[in-house]
Image 1 (cartoon, rainbow, N blue to C red):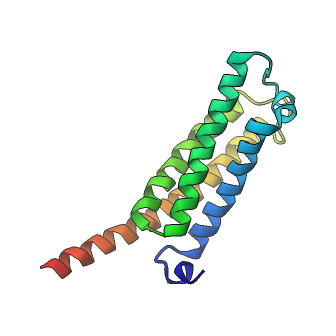
Image 2: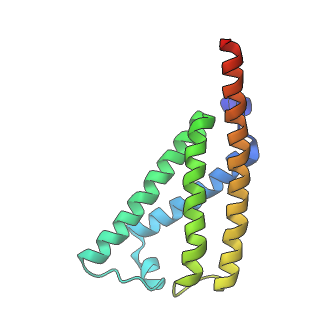
Length: 147
C-alpha cells in the first residue's frame, strides 16, 4: 500500500484499472466456469469448435488480467502505458462490436451500450494521456540528470 501512495500514477487511474480488472475477471469466470451464462448470451457451447473459441477468449482475457494486476503492483508508468493501450483498443473494439452484434441477454439497448463504451473509452484515453505525460516527464528528468 505504501508503494501505491508513493506512485506517480494518480489514484483515479488505479481505481479505474481495478474496476476494469474486476470486469475482466468476471468475464474470465464466465468463459471458464459458467457456460450457462455464455449460452444465455446466445453463444453455442456444444462441440469442440465452440469450446475452443470460448476458452481462447477466456485465456486472452486472463492474460490481460495478469498484466493489469502486475502493472498495478509495480506502478511502473511505462508498463502502465502498455496496459492502458490494450484497454483502449479492447474497449474501442467492443464499443463497435457490441451494438452491431448484441448478445441475446444484453442488459442495455445497442445505442446505450455504444454510449457507455464511448464514456469508458474517454476515461481510458484520459488515463493514457496522464500516464504518457508522467512517462515523458520522467524521461526528460533522466536526460537532464545525465547531462
